[in-house]
Length: 324
Image: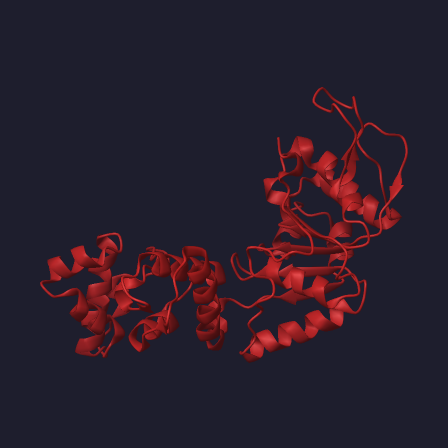
C-alpha cells in the first residue's frame, strides 16, 4: 500500500539537493526570475519540461522563496498513485470507509498545512480523480473518503507534467476546466542541451555531493572529460548527468574524473545511424568518429570491447571521439 510512502519533504534538504539551483545560463536565469515572482503570490503554477529537467527542484525553490518557506513542502507523484487509492491519498479517508481503512488518515491536501503541495505528473490522474481535484480547488475544501463532512485546506498548489497537455486536452484525457484551473502560470524548464553553460557548475555540485556520499574527495574533471560532457546530447537531462557523475565518482581510480570514467546511456533513438551521420561533404575525421560511435553502440557502450574490435587503444578511442 502506498500510504505514507508518498514522497514527503519538509524543511530538511532533500536528496535532489534543492539548495543547489544552478543558473549560469540565460535560460535558467529567466526561469528563476519568473519563479521568484511567482513565489511572491499564491497563484497556481504549472511546471512543464522533459523528464529529468528538475521540475521538482524548481517547485522546492518556489516554496523556499515564498512566505510559506518555514511550512511543510509535500510532493506526490500522481503517476505512482493507483486509481483506487488516489482519492484517499489526496483527500484522506475515514476509518471503515473500506476494508483496509483501519484508522482515520489525512490526505496530503490537509497534511500540507499552510505550506506547499506539489502534484507531480498531474496529467496521469484519471478523469474521475481530476473532477474531484477540480472540485476541491474551486471550493477550497476536501472531503475524505467515507466522510460526509468537508475540511478546508490552506496549502498552495504547484503542479508539473512532462507531457504536452494540449494534445491530451483534445483527446479528452485532460478535463478542460482543470486544465485552465492549473494553467494560471506556466514555467517551462529547459532541457539540459538548451542550457549547456550550466553543465560545468552542475558537475562541480554533483561531484561534491557524490564525493560526500562515497567518502571520496574528488579534485575535479579533466578537460577532455568535460569536453565529452559538454558534447553529449543528454536525453535524460539533469537526472542523467547526475547519474553519470555519480557512477564516475564511485568507479574512478583517481581523484580526477577522466574520459574512461564516463558511461553514457546511448540509445539508437538518440544516436543517428552511420549512414545518416555522414554525407559527401563530411570530413574523414567525422566519418571515422561516426563509425566509432556505431561500433560503440553495437557493443552496448562497452568502450574496451569497441576499442578491441577497432584495433585501437581506449585512449585513442576517447581522443577520436573528442575530435582532437
